[in-house]
Amino acid sequence: MDLRQLENIVAIAEERSISRAAERLFISQPALSQQVSKLEARLGVPLFSRDKQGLSLTQAGKVYVENAKKILSIRDETYNRIYDIAAYRKGSISIGVSPGRSPMIVSKIYPQFQREFPGFNIQVFDISNAQTKEMLIQGTLDLGFLLLSDKEISARLPISHLAITQEDMYLVTSKNHPMAARYHNGSQGRMIDLRLFQNETFALPTKGAKIRLFVDEIFASYGISPNVCYQVYNIQSIITVVSESRLCTIIPAGFLPDNENLIYFRLKPNRFMEFSICWNSNHRMTTAEKFFVELCQKVYL
Image (cartoon, rainbow, N blue to C red; front, side):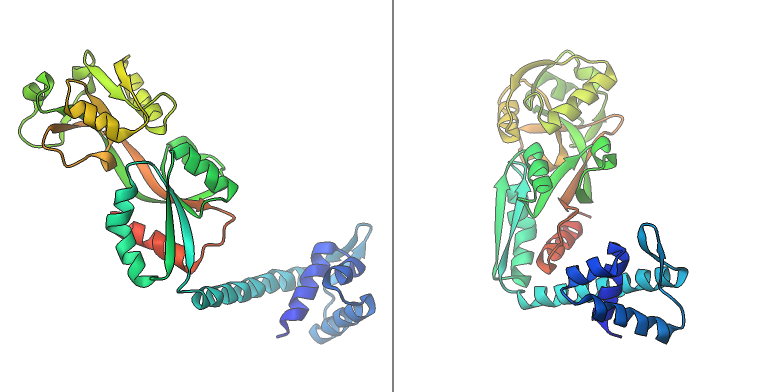
C-alpha cells in the first residue's frame, strides 16, 4: 500500500479541493487528479462527489479516509518509537514537584530510572502545586506531581493524569500535646473526630495553597472555624513548629516525617487527596517519560 497515496487522499478530504490539496502537498493538480482517478478505477467506486461547498466524501470515501488515518497514525507512532530508541541514552526530563517531596523522587524513583536511562538528566523544580499545573499547561514542564481535587479531575484542563496514590489526611500534634496524651492509644494513625480538636490552635499552610484549600474544606464540613496562629507555605516548617509546640496541623500522608516527637491521627470519616503524575495532553511522551510514569505507578501502588 502506498502511504503517500493515503496522505494525498486524506489531504483532499480535509481541504475539500484537489487544487488546495495539491498546493498543500507541493504537487501539481493534474498529477493529483490523475492519482484519484486511477485509485477510484482500481476500487470500482468513487471516493468523492462534488457539491456547492466543494468535494465531499462518498460512503466508500469515508471508509477509505477513516482507515487511511489509522494506518498513517500507526506509521507515525512506529517512527516516533524508533526515534526514541535511537535517542535512548541521552536526553532530559523536567519535573515539577511540591517542596518537601523531592526526596521521594531521589530515593524511590530516580535510582531505578537511572539504571534504565543512565544518560538522562532529571531536572526537578521545587515549586507549588499551582505553578506546576500552570507550567504543564504552558508546556514548559514535561511531567509534574499534583494533588488534584475532584473539581480539577472533572475539569477540561489540557492535562492528562495518572493517579498513583490516595493520601489520607492526618491531624498531627507533638507527643507532649495534652490532646495527644488524652487520645493517643500507643499506635500511630488512630481515627479521631476532628471536632475533639475544634478548640485547639493550628499551624496551617498559607491561605490559597492547595493543601490549605482542602484543609479549609475539611474544617467547613465539620462546621469548625479553626484558630490559626501560624501560617507558612513550607510544610516542613509547619511540621517543625508543631513538633516543638502545642500547635496542631492537618497534612497529607505524603508529608508525614519519621519523627518520634509527633503523634498522627487519621480523620474520621477518612479524608484524602489524590496524588497524581501529570503531563500536558498535547505533549507526545517519550519512551523515557513513559518509563518514569510507569515507575511512579509501581512505587506507589
